[in-house]
Image 1: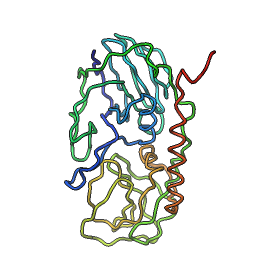
Image 2: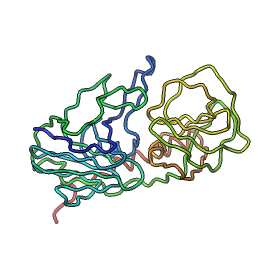
Image 3: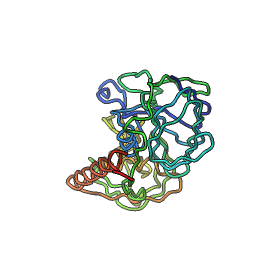
Image 4: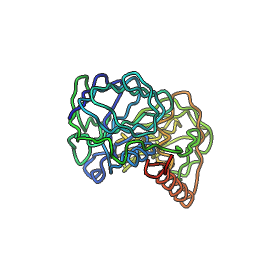
Length: 297
């Protein structure tokens, strides 16, 4: 059974990313919106599934036979032109055309159960900085998919309540540079490699530092006083002072920011960060409803 890509829009292949390779200079990469990714992993019922991360434009594909599909995010989803609810898992019949078009903050994630994509260093993630990962998607590209049955327990599942999130507040832990970066900023530019913010008041940085290890979420300060938040496709080392690191529960918000957005940097304690992550993980576990759990209609 196969699916054929008809139009790509701005779409990447992603999964949870590459762990364990930073010692050889390979960054983690992976899904930009890790909250949506964790939700779609639960929805499609697979550990570390390969997904299509639709960032902009319209991604469309055609099926040769029926497949099980899950979609998470804010977007327009159509099967043969008929609207389908997002944040759901459904059976897409053979010879159908599926279209996915983001129309809100952040990417839309599309998972196809049992899709077969070769891994590179244990991951299918496409790293936009290094170029590591599968080749860029092109029209007429074909993927093999495992057989699907209508009676599969996942068909008809949905997310009952998307975890609440406020992209205008980014919480962080203090870093090695003690400068106070609390306050409001304007987003100047955003990509998977990082976010550049407006110049902060009374902020400055040493022009050059010996390179040191960094990771997604690290907040660095340029010599001109502009905070830069490293994204999921950042490098593994950096030379600007590190003033903080975004907490794990807020990393997904970085994918939802756009140039011109206002945000507030808010410092929290390590205990608060742990509590916020635990609460988020609980909400993800409870979010998916299966047909077997809904009882008789």
